[in-house]
Image (tube, rainbow, N blue to C red):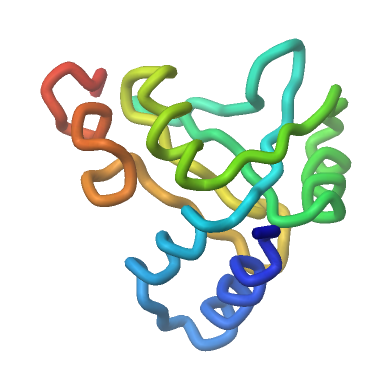
Length: 130
């Protein structure tokens, strides 16, 4: 499933300011998002103890982000949100969250907390770098 439903839900959330976080996380998990690759690795940024992976609901939103940052995106990979949260993030290790459509009209962050990422790599988890 492409990320159109996720983008719509994010737009609705931005318009009302209220939303159902578990439903939004569920929509993210079912959606195929685009993750940019730069220099052979997934594009991310660290803020404090948390590393943030970037994910986008469309090529257009990804291109706006790249243009704003002056970033040259080598490629992007489509990946289901569930795989990103359950497999990719644990392989990275430590607390890693996902920043979705950060340059778009309705951005969202999925913090590395229990219930979103696996408990073993959630903030404050034993073994997760904090």
